[in-house]
Image (cartoon, rainbow over all chains, first blue to last red; front, side):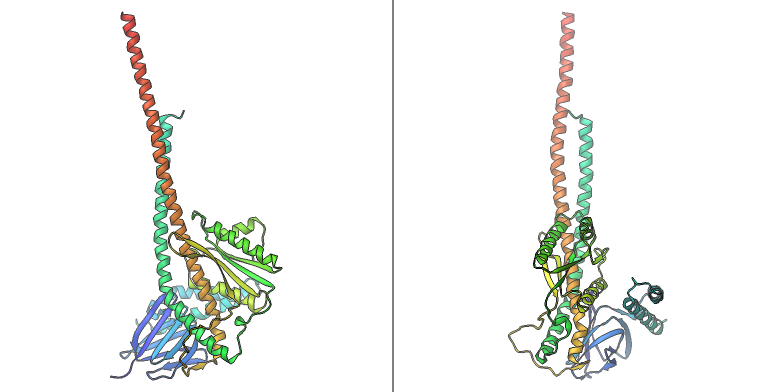
Amino acid sequence: MQNKLKLEVITPYGEVINEEVDEVYTTGAEGDFGVLPGHCPFMTAIRIGSLSYKKDGQMHYLFVNRGYCEVLNDRVLVLVGSAERVEDIDIERAKAALARAEERIRRAQAGEADIDYARAQAALERATIRIQLATKFIPR
Amino acid sequence: MPTLRDIRKKIKAIQGTKKITSAMKMVAAAKLRKVQDSMFRYRPYATKMQQVISDLAGAVETRGDLPPLLLRRPIKNVEVLIITSDKGLCGAFNTNIIRTATKEIDRLKKEGLNVTISVVGRKARDYFRRRDIPLKNVWTGISGRLQYTHAQVISQELINAYVSEATDEVLVIYNEFKSVISQRVVVNRILPIGRIASESAEQPVFIPFTYEPRAPELLAMLLPIYIEIQIYRALLESQAAEEAARMTAMDNATKNCDELIKKTTLIANKVRQASITKELMDIVGGVEALKQTEG
């Protein structure tokens, strides 16, 4: 039998994934990377983006917030602020968040001082990726 | 002398109060269970992240270039973050924390330090507003719907102030949840982080990790998360402590109501007895009078 990877995704709200999988792909601090069984020990920070894994020939997709990833002895440990399966993404909410973030950025650029530009930017990024993921991968 | 009707009305009122307090006790108990549940689910994330960061810090420390959040500098400006609740009716919960906080602030001021105050919760905000003490940051509306993002926002604010050297030290004062019947006020220094490498006696097994980016930069990226973890834990603890305090307070209130009902019922019975005796005396007196006129 072929070697498997143990994938653990843990957030402050609890464990999201704890499964034996074949492949893992996600976005690291310096670009996307993939993990197959037998990967060398590896540590990186995770950026807001997607995490996908292959299990029994089937791809699964998740939205992940920023955090940390460690690969050691065929065990992939992912610690992120939040993670949700693509199927669970609430598109309406993401769209509302996107509109809100755009509005805030527009106002910040217009010179309103009390708006946190960086936070609005991050919110925009999260919303955009959520929507992208959801429209791309939700089986309809 | 109150009439029987007045007393009966009073008993009804107390019974109403008792219903409310015991309902609030149940609500607090349910909420406490919820918070305890999220504390439980939070634990694996916190412990693993802490482990990772302290290992990494250990690896970086031996090489000797430390990110700014780990460095200490002479302390001139201190920021105090005080975590209270938004709602009252939870016994001495907020009073305790504010008392400790003001004491701590006075102590720091006596040492000649500049103190800025940030608060979580309406209760601390109101306290300092009433005394015209300026507050740097105010976060309200957190209790009851605490999210990890709250911790992220708060940490970001604290880290910004620290990195821009507006503050040289950050203290967090909150209620720690020890058990349902006891909460303890704790003062924690969260910035500068100081030493976080675990001081386990056993030599850690050296694993040739590939770091991306290099270890010091990776550590610098993860350190904000370390702060977030502590803030989130403080917020969770405070929430649990708040609900536990409310539970105890409401339990006491319910017991008080019981006692009051007992006492007032006693008075009501006495008054009833007295009025019966009076009526009897009237009747007996009337009969006597009749006898006399007949006789």
